[in-house]
Image (cartoon, rainbow, N blue to C red):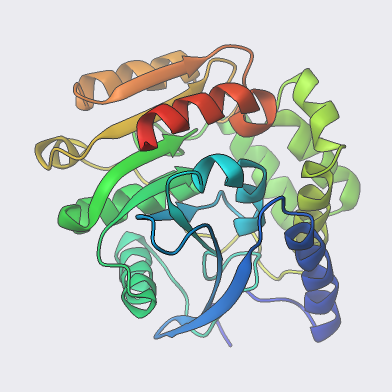
Length: 296
């Protein structure tokens, strides 16, 4: 269907799903899977934790799917029922039937998904592009967001670095295993590269690589994060935590932190040393501690 990103073939999707299932099977906590029908297509959802606990919605980074939350799942599920949503139109188990072309579509799709899941109000946590999605939802429906944790937020207060965009375009037009491995290495520190090659991250990155190579328009038609007016978020009095790596390759980390402090003066802004963009890989214990303090 024109304008929609999707797997190139049934075999490509099957290869991806096999690795996705392996990542889920390796989770240290039991995870259930379900599919939600929306006007944008079928949304795949992972869930874990005690259903009697308050809900927490987790939005993943671009093209890395909800399995990327599994290494943090014990921390997230300690005090919450965790719902991890595969972004529609991205490399994931969700299946789009029409494109999401901007913030309004993302908010509408996510709202339909949460309503179908019976989640009226929740804490939200986002990683990279997922932070942008969660923030857009909080801006549209502030009364439905209890608190908001943003890990390595992308595009909210500053544009993406040109070097990073050039790497994305290279992946878009010449996806290969070596290019993908090289790309992943640029968004973590040298120490983090070793962790990417060990479980559980090895399975997750392998899943992402196979999916990206088998997916049409994986980066060309992805929604681009755009800057937004965070003053509306501040006026809604939603507690916000922002976690930024000092050695960010997607943004200038310290400059981005300064902009967040200016626009969200009540928020907790944390700069993590020896951390690039995928901070849960570079500094997992620090991220776990910050999330525990904020979410409990």
